[in-house]
Picture 1 (cartoon, one colour):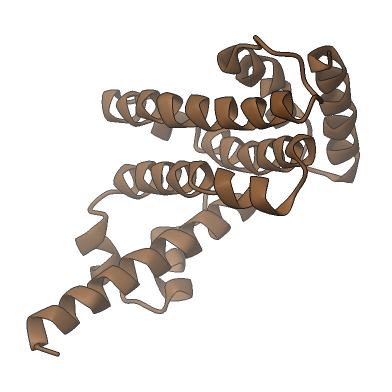
Picture 2 (picture 1 turned 90 degrees about the vertical axis):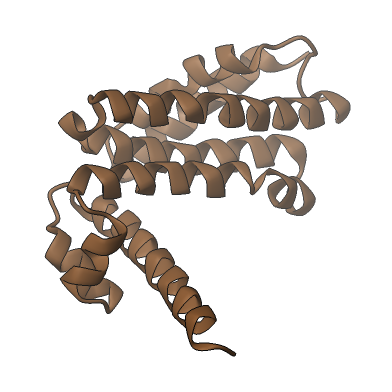
Length: 183
């Protein structure tokens, strides 16, 4: 392998490591320092700042990376779970991503942030549509439900406390919503 190709592979590996560590660290605490993220990712601060020159740049990329990964899991989730359970588990994972987004507060109020957040709607809506279509095909959900309505309705999930009690409340809220989707 040539030296430039290896450097690019290393750079991609470092970028992925930073994004994964940042996702996990921001889940734990939205105030985590960038130096702490770099250390946990096994890279120097310079490497982190080469990829993400500002905190906002990192936060926005973590958000986009998470949404991209999540929307790409629909096929796998539907292949490994019955459609209605796939819908439930997918929304539970989405809730985790949105909680991170809400924890980022002011970082997601800039024009660049709003552009990234707005760009995530079409793939998320398409993913929800695929999940709903599978549920309709299985007879568990009535046809004609708008995926944007489902997202808006289930947005209550990421407002529940991030605790065992909150998880139980989220499960109850999901049950209520799904009961309304049934034929």
